[in-house]
Structure formats: structure tokens, C-alpha cells
Amino acid sequence: MSTRMLYPELGREYPVAVRAKGSYVYDAEGKSYLDGCSGAIVVNIGHGVPEIAEAIRAQVEKITFVTRLQFTNPQAERLAAELTALAPGDLGHVFFTNSGSEAIEAAMRLAFQYWQETGRPERTVMISRDGSYHGATLGAIGLSGHPNRRHTVRAVLPAWPRAAAANCYSCPFGLTRSTCGLDCARSIEDAILAAGPERVAAVVIEPVVGASGGAVPPPPGYLREVAAICRRHDVLLIADEVITGLGRTGHWFGCDEEGIVPDLLVLGKGLSAGYAPLGAVLLRDRVHDAIGAGSGQFSLGHTYAANPLSAAVGLAVLRYVREHDLPARARELGPRLAAGLRRVLRARGIQADVRGRGLLLAVDFSRPGEEPGITAAEVVRAARDAGLLLYPAGVTPVPQAVMVAPPLTITVAELDRLVDLFATALDTVRPRVAASLEG
Ligand code: PMP
Image (cartoon, rainbow, N blue to C red; front, side):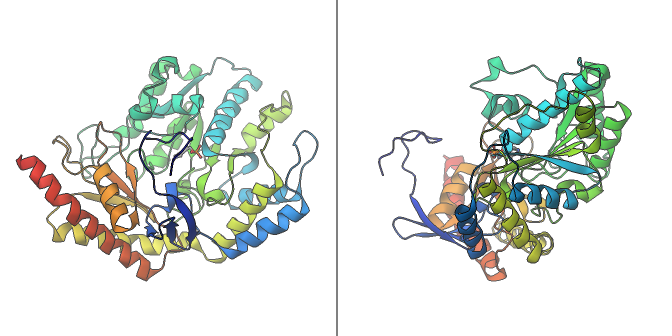
């Protein structure tokens, strides 16, 4: 199809998606694809859910838009109430946006404003981590430690410090699980001390790194240690739960894994599961009340923020996730999927790291310290040809991990088919890699 739109690779022919149902996407040629990555790890409840279609139709008939300058609306109010009831601790307030990037921007602005309102306007430094991805807008990419995605705008980004990644597969400190002393958490403290704690506004972490690193969970105790470090230096903690939020990792929130309560918690993707653009920032009372007691204004305006249609979608999605207990399903199915992936890799003598939490998994073909062999791009291509959608991950010059993160509604039979299709893809890629290495 000729296109007038900009795509990641200009000039490449992309298949044309025309329809999707459950765990499958169909293209214009009638080819079906098992959605092994929920689009961009978004479609947590599967495609074409009738309850969501009904909620959208009903809402369009009632009202789709009001501006927050004039009205609130019952859908956004109810969604805010339900999210704050689910969220840990006193994350009792919500600001809605239309995407994860916008929600990250809002979280950063809330953090800056918090320090202004409390008389410490010099706290303007944001600390994030190597290999992180927090979004595409300038502020969010400025926060991200993802070199591939930063490079075209690198020159205009703020020079904020970055702490080490928490990555046990490729530990930046050369440690192993048995010698781990949480140096990765300590590197956040080092970054705070180097910047001067009195200048630091917030630390931003993803409870499990998503597509930038390839489903990288931190070592046990890391989240608790980072929360303690932030408390010690009176620095705000922002949890980017755009991918991990709302069930994907087997918990409602990634932070629940270690029972921590960030000052700001950012949601996107699974919040609307791809049925409408929607993001959100949850704020602890401390942040909300400081603004309330100070200027009493949060003047960040996105025209579509908190629109009734997206909020109605969010409510219907949340109801679906709750009624089908999808966090528990992610917890239950994750190990089965990981075991299947490991089995086909082992049967082919391919060494790769299969890791993640719940149904946020990745297969990482990189070997620390070795030349790239199998690459993400070729596995994704071979899988697509075989009828399986996967998502490339990793920040090395040649990304070598693939995300395997199907809808949380995937059936056991579909899960087993996913593993078979993955095996087919490997069987296409491996001889090519072997030939190129020999050549
Ligand atoms: N944070 C994380 C962890 C993400 O994975 C993403 C999207 N991949 C974003 C933020 C940005 O979200 P969006 O693409 O909806 O703007």
C-alpha cells in the first residue's frame, strides 16, 4: 500500500492490519498473526472485546468531550476513584493524559512544582537509569537512558545524571546473584550525592524494565532499597509503570512486588489496553497537598485529558481485568510460557536468557562480552513470516532481545502455539546466522 505517513523505516512495505480478535491480528491479505507482544505491550485484554465495544458505543451516545476548564465528568471521576482504590498506599489523586509520554511529562512537572511549592525551587535534577525508556516527547526522552532513541535530539537534551541499570544478566558491576550487594541501587545514591541531594527533584525507575532492556527485573530488594534511598535524601520517587501497571507482571502494579509506594506512579498502555489513547499519573497526598496548600493550581493542559470517552474505555477495561483476574492469570501463565521458550531454545542448543515477570517476558540472545549472533530484527522478521508478532528490545548497537508479552487473556492452547511458532522462527534464523558466522 502506498503511504503518505511516516513510519519507523521510510520506504519499507508494512503489512496492512485490517482486523483483530482475541489473540490474533489479521492483515489485508487474510494472513493471521498470533499477537505475541500485545501490539507494543498494550492490548492486555486481547483484541475486539465486545464489552469494550459496548462501553464505547454507550459513551458516544451520552457525551464524548468536555474541557476540564469547564466540567468534570462521571467517567473520569469514577476511573480516578477506582485507580486510587487499587493503587498502593496514599496514591490518592490522579491526573489523566493521552499517552505514557504525556504522563511522564506530567509526573516531571508535578515533581518540579512540588519543590517550588515547598520552597525548594533549586531541586531541578532528574535521575534516571542507563538503558531506560520513558517516552518520546523531549522531556521524556531527556529522561531516558536509551541511546538509540536519543541520538537525533541528543544535543538539546538536559545533562541529567544517570545511575547504573539494574540488570543481573549483564551486571554493570560484574557481579553474580550470589555476590550481588545491590550496587545498582547504591549507584542511585551515588548519583544523588554527586548532584547534591539539595538539587535533586526525583529519581525515576521502571519496576521491571520494558522493551528498552527486554523485560529486565531488578534483583530482589532493589525496589525497597531505592525507595529507602529516596526517603533518606528526601527525593521524590517516580515509578514508570506504563508497561508494568495494571496486571502485566502478575501484580496490579510492578511496585507491589516489594510493597513500595512511589510519590508519583505513571500509567499508560494497559490502562486502556489499546481501545483509546489514555495515560495517567497517580500522586501521593504529600505531592497533591503541597500544591493544594501552595498555589492551588496545576496548569498543565492537554485538550483531550480526562475526556469521557477514554475514561469510559478505561473503566470498562479495568472492570474486565478485575472480573477475569488478569494479574493472577499473568502470574500463572508466565512460568508456563517461559518454560516453553526455554525448552525450544535448549532443544536447538541456543544459549539465551529467558526472563521477566508474569507475562512480561523477553528472550535475550546477547552473550555479555561476545559479538552479536542472533539479532532481534531477524527473529522478529522470521516470527512475523511464521505468523507470530514479537517486539524487538535492547539498547545495544545491535538489539538482541525480543519481547514475548501476549495478551493476558491468551488461552493455554494459544500459548503453546506461540512457543511452536517461536521454534519455527528460530529454525529460520539459526541456519542464516550459522552461515554468516562461518562466512
Ligand atoms: N514508559 C515506558 C516504560 C514505556 O514502555 C513507554 C512506551 N513504550 C512509555 C513510557 C511512553 O509511552 P507512550 O508511547 O504511550 O507515549
